[in-house]
Amino acid sequence: VAHSGYLDAYAALVTETVVLPGVYISEKTWQSIAMGQWIFILGCPGTIAHLKHLGVDTFDDIIDHSYDKEPDFFVRIQKLHQSMEQFLLLDHHRLWKDTANRRLLNQKKFLSGEIDQRYLSELRQTIDEITI
Image (cartoon, rainbow, N blue to C red; front, side, top):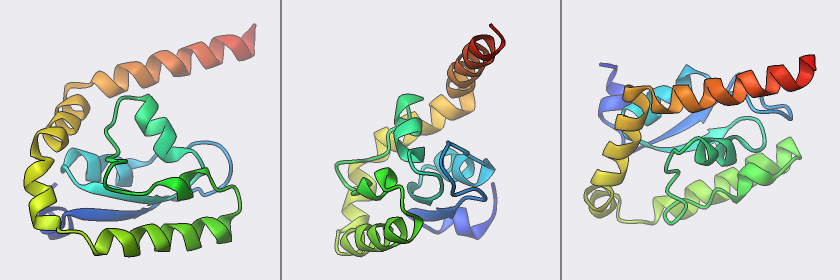
């Protein structure tokens, strides 16, 4: 991804297409992960938890993702704003250096297809459970 929005930013605020219950992760989230950015996601409740389940480091020690559990959309936005405000107080330059290996690992997992395989396996299992 050669867009300056990915090349010149430490973090991304991803606004997913779907924000209703259930998990929906689009290319917008995956591009930010592939570029090694920290992410905040305005999406379905549980999106961050699902990414963690897939093996993505969501940097919970740096970012308060408690908004991810909030079912009420308007409260989730308020909590997301609070999380971003807390994040803006941090020393991003130092954290960028300190998390370089972790961000690189996220990139490698994504680009190697490791996350895809886990996702496809879970999708097949879900389809099998529905059709049984």
